[in-house]
Amino acid sequence: MSFTFCTSQAIIQKAGANTNTTAAASGSLIKAFYDQAESETIASANYDFVTNTPNTTWGSQLLGDAISDRAAIKLINYDLSSYYSRAEAQTMLSVLDDQWRVKIKTISDQNITGKI
Figure 1: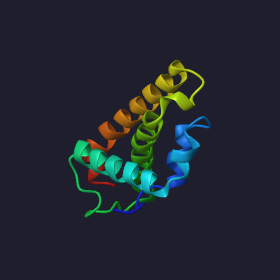
Figure 2: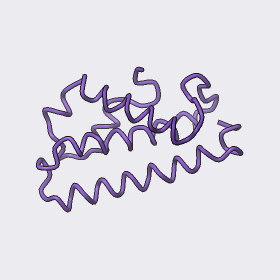
Figure 3: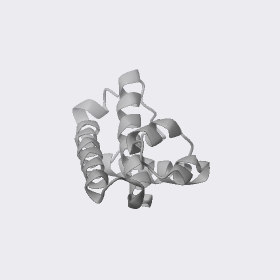
């Protein structure tokens, strides 16, 4: 897989300013997180968006946003100690997970999937 739906920068940005800089600078690690997030998002949506690429800009953006949310969660979890507090990291994880779940619900809706 490649960065089909979002950029590595989108993932790093969502992980926040206090993310582990070594991890954020590792292209191979970010790529692995992207691949995992893409697979999880597609499996959760129950639709193969890689084979059936969205035909709309908003569909691609929504999918990319969901994938970058999930990959950012993985980047944050890589090293929670880089954040000011455990609570800061946990809050960011909770917000990203909530956003990801809302987007998955939206793109899983058969009425939406057919229009993406």
